[in-house]
Length: 241
Image 1 (cartoon, rainbow, N blue to C red):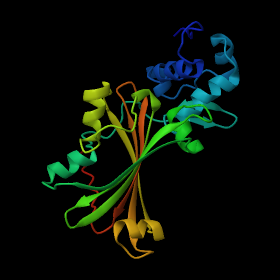
Image 2: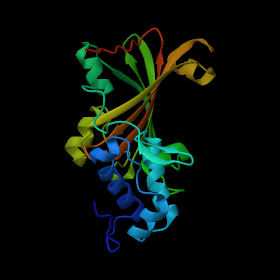
Image 3: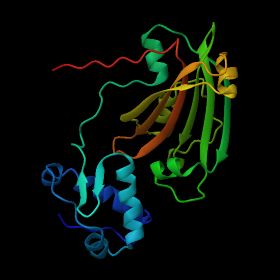
């Protein structure tokens, strides 16, 4: 495969390098364990700095698609098309259970997020993104607090009607389709602020779910963190051999 990017394009070089890497790791020989071209070779062939290339590589490392082995090189960690199927948005999950959801509070803010979120989105230091906080639940009370960060590429302004399902707004108003969700679920204890929001006692158990959402081209769309009352959320995994 010829390694090349368009230096006359308006698309930043590190994003072009990232998209090229995504194509490279789909090649069967690399999925079967062959080392990816080294940074010196690749940056020279592409005509970009190693720092620019490393920014693209770090993005795929962060997503768990490739792995650096010290003194060895970089390899694909798993088949790229291996993913969880049939994931749903929160609204879809609740609708499938016949639960009507109430938004108790919604807040928006433009800010510069932390390095983890900037790295996930592949954004430069100092870039502002839209942050949305939503306290949601049933008529009996709130049971989940969401914090979402959105890639500026979507075009959100913060003035959208978020009483509508989030991904419907993306699809219908901004032509952004969500395709893949990767999740991390952990148990933690409610701090004072979260206990107040979820009507719990400080120190009560809650579940924390991180969701990394991508479009069909595996470009990041949303970085979401949800804090759930442990007595209101069950996570079920179905496997079939």
